[in-house]
Image 1 (cartoon, each protein chain N blue to C red):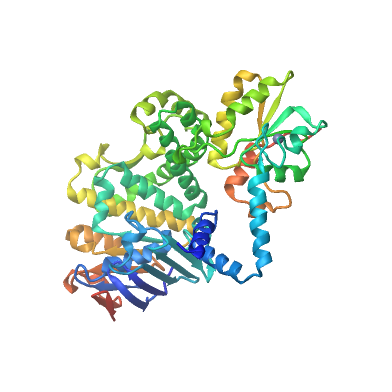
Image 2: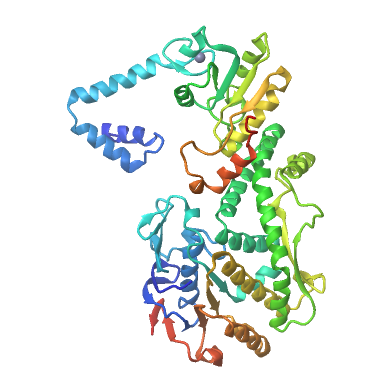
Length: 355
Length: 198
Ligand SMILES: [Zn+2]
């Protein structure tokens, strides 16, 4: 996957930017608040048409503007625009408007690594569900569709629960089970398939001992629509009391373990950072396998946070990547690893790029 | 408020018509010859005065009972339940169904505050109970999440009546091409597969 050219208007800290990106990628130097992260976020927007860290579209609009626009050349031209007034998002591919966003998601893939990724490990299960959901949506249209169905059905079921209407809430159990069964099956399968590779990447990043991940809750037998429905039927009294649906994939987790213990609670900062990087690298590999094309990989100021040893391991791993466009940002020249010296270099200042 | 603003506001309340389209329609009407506009106005008035829900099934009709309810040749032991009157037209065009209709007037949507009491569910139960024979109720609500939930709810409500409750099959469109069908539709079509006749 290669992003050849990028256009940004009124996106976060960037008012207007047009650039061509070298095939091997680029190193971008800029102090905080100059637009580095905005640039990477705009690029990622072309993959998912949603913010990387779950911000609302209107929060992505530059202060004082009435909307934003992002376009990228990736072999095809992907355009996305948003207007605050109509709360309307417009996406087009090669000039053809896309009516169902799902049809455009995953045409372009990118994996961003940033210091904030440590939250993948330290935050609650929601952060890791989001990680899984983004990754699986990019590679599987049906997953994205089932996911939005599940969200819609949960809203309906919970609205009925809030009104204390048991039969009406239960009427949504069928559609809930249809969506939930698919989502859980795909997530479990992914966690199983990539378990070994996750451990290998951790080792390659210099983490001694066993690293593992497992989908939670564990199940001896896979869930079926029937088991999900009967579970919902059993727990509905509790749901009525709590006025929310307590059972389902929206409560699950991808547990990250070291020596069999929860890294979220028992890990050091360094171990948590390594595990987060490992998850992102795993995401890149999984996307490569699903789409047949390596995603654009973006390092947002990631080297500053890593000690020399871990930096070295990460850079070693990158050597094996052929045909990968890598975009790296750093606050200062001195933070750029030696191995990246031969890459094209830009600086970014006040949302403007100087090559 | 001027007359123009009034009409803009009324038109913008219609489904699928935003502020912009409403304004365009208003100015379009202003440019038409007076009789054209008056004909539209009188058509609207007639619609409001003459058309009412059928007292039995809820279908929109110009008489107390709609044609499907008074037709003696239709089967009294078979009901087809739809969300809206307009769904009846679609089913009638197919010509497969020869029983009686029942219009719910919407679908369950707790989020929008639409519950069973807002739909003609009691009336349906009552109608089914009045038939002195085994009844089949075909639930033809939309294949949306809310349509499915409504179907499930109905089947629960009708349990005590002893009626056979069936759901229209969901699957591939006739004349379509399998390779262009989306995965969810194919999945449903697979789940609803049937045995081939010997
Ligand atoms: Zn009628």
